[in-house]
Image (cartoon, rainbow over all chains, first blue to last red):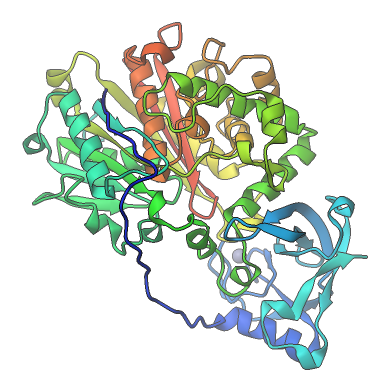
Length: 157
Length: 387
Ligand SMILES: [Zn+2]
């Protein structure tokens, strides 16, 4: 093999700054529109089940990735679940240190067990455990805006 | 199948934290080195297969087009492909389609990545691989995925962080003998465990560095390969497979998609007992535990037992089954697509007996490289043989 050898100068390279100047307006889509509207208006969590292969989805979906069937029916689940895994994050996006470490969990949702949901865990890092039961913590109704943050996080039951 | 395909040449740049060269200049250096290594020029090349990571890393949209000149694409059939971190091992598979089909006789496969243009680092680009409605608002970093998977893997099989940290010790040490290495080091398990905690259980030294770099190989059909070299290395099996689009819902303790990709490649290569027949392997190791996780998915170790092979020294360069003799991503560095192709090049060199100080003993005849990517649920696998 040939290897191209070159001088490495890590510190004194000249550079100029740039960015990709784009902003986005995302739609929720057919499935999540229902999901977030239900939380905002009724405080209820919607899951769905594929009519053909019975795979469950949380949040609710309009099609099944496994068999491609259309899903037209949603059902309510309590939003509770089991912690499948967790991590304790010490850094912000820009690499700076967080003042308070954030606990992030993967939650297998009761009543939609094929699905695992990612969100913050409202618990001190040393108390977090794989296998613990948790429930969602919702904002007060008047404060909800139909986003993922209507769920503040999940806390131990 | 149209024809058998061999790798006949390879080249790469040094992997560094921040290269002065642009992405296309890196691509050209690696591509030219690969052509030189087998005595060919661009005129001898029928088509180009180019692999690179998300456009956002270079901050150049339609990056495949941008990198086309450095990759040798001028007035040739040129195609860019991308499967996230899996790209580097998908690259030779993609090139293989072109030649195995019989449509082309030679193909130049180039992977180039310039991660350092992202300022201060690429986490902002990684954030936008997550679902825009349910996940991006939480400000996820890529490390979350690995930390969550790492924790689940340990819990499921009762593995300790101490055993997993040995991967970093082994690979960074192996990289000392790699002339392109970005982060070769002699370190101890305690150095890994005491390095900065990023997202428990992931410490700084559990992670490969973001690097700039490029790698390239030359593929040829059987007759041409035999005419050009005495030591063709044959692509005997290829496989790739994608798991669920909802990353959190896949099996975190076991990479089923890697197993499916491996089984596809093994079947094509006629491999019945991978543990016996795969003599040397370069599984994808962007994080320490992933080398072990992937060995299990590749059926090179029983579930949960890869750490014991590591502890027993089986996976050392002079062990019974050397794993990541190059130094891997942890040691050689991680310019995403180029890192995967670096692994393929390592197996190519090892099977030719040309790996220099890194050469494993015993004249291996069959090896494997594997990468992992997309939303952390694709496996790409290639099996190479020297006869
Ligand atoms: Zn279905």
